[in-house]
Length: 90
Image (cartoon, rainbow, N blue to C red; front, side):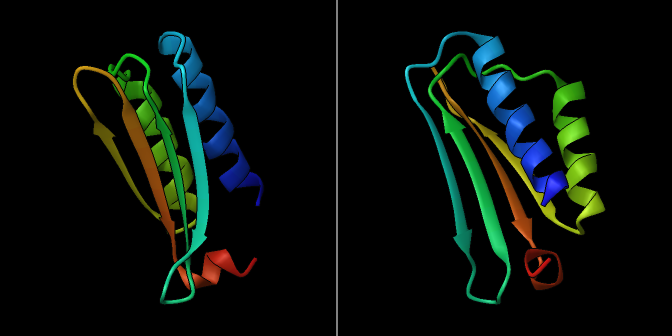
């Protein structure tokens, strides 16, 4: 729970630091296989520092989760963390 919260906190913090987004969307959903998926999307400037993404990916790896990020031009980005069932049940 703590690691997932830290990923969420850092993703939202970076959304705000990149420039004032007008919208940040956060979703946490159960997956069909019994896992969970965290999605943080914003409509702010799309650039993300690679060090930030690497840190988020490392945190996700501690949960055996799959991490991905997506940039949308001209504005917006999405961070996605897919937790396996073993991590989602903790």
